[in-house]
Length: 476
Image (cartoon, rainbow, N blue to C red; front, top):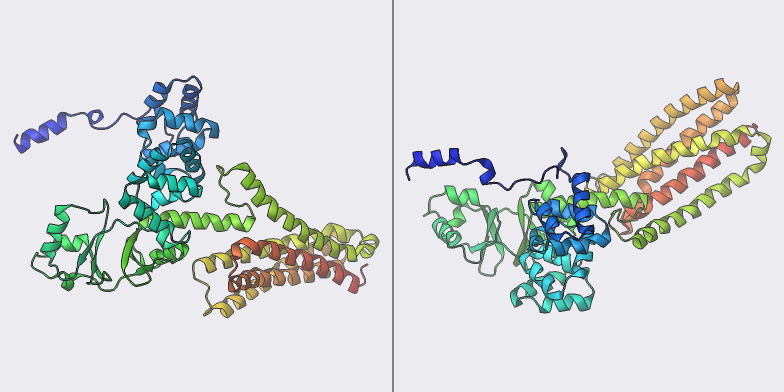
């Protein structure tokens, strides 16, 4: 066939012949599954029409199939998995929510789980197996091929949320004595190569990484050039025990696509790629926000008892701090009885202080998480937040003081609430940065506990400063 004939054949082939037909109305303009499509699938499941279910789901992308499992009821998920068993490949399992995947894995036999795990990248297989009971985990591993089992057992030996759990053992490494031509021939041979890779790691005789070569360099360099002459010797190496959050920060700071992972002896044991890190960045960012609110994992697929336990724990702690704040008010109940207007105005002082403290706390926790706040600039950061708190306190104090003085015809009351507003804003700024810094120095996650202490500080100081100044000024 001539090039002209081939071009004509391509022109005459309709697009529908080479692409799977999309399910009608399955996705909306935001590329999420529509309510009507999900209803069709649920109705077909309820009526036992497994063929209809398969017909509806087959054209979907694996990520959309994973979303479908999250959108239906938990008791419907095993039936859906059974109806589309041929479509439940590694791509779908890799995209599933952790809690949904755990439920589905429990509904499968050990052999079926092993078959799926062998198709997954090591990091995805580990994510699927790590939450299983030890007995079930060992039973699944026993069903796997020795090579796959050894890789997963090795990954499971590392602590959770470390580079060892995150990394893939599929990478391309070549000795440093090769020429570019040797590397190209090795890659074209294709045996035992990773499915996806962006660079070739260069190792010495001890399997220590000494450099790296991007594929674009390999393809553009003459064959007779020594690999050692074109490789980049400066590279970011990730220790196998490094926390995954720190790994994500390294990728972000140095704009990495992939990075070599080394063990305690400096030997190359795996690689981490940017697609894994994007997931970690999203996970860690969401985790910090939810921890600040005491909402636990915040996953809508999390079992009810786990969500209740996580939220109730911090609500009980907050109840204790609220009682402490109310006890401060109790010290001034005589003054409030004499001048009831104090009870009307005091929530303004504590509420504004709480909001200001939350602002400072959010900035500080983020700065700690992204390594923007370190021992080198701690004093400057404290001074900056104190200055911000002073300016905000003076501005808000002037506004509320003027308003109260004019509305209630009591300039002294306006001065008291203005001074209390300034004092509580200074407390909010100080607590908002010092509390998370202190917890961080004590190796306690500041995102978990800071909000409780900051809120307590602003509530207590807000009530105490306003009511105390009112008594000292002779208002009550």
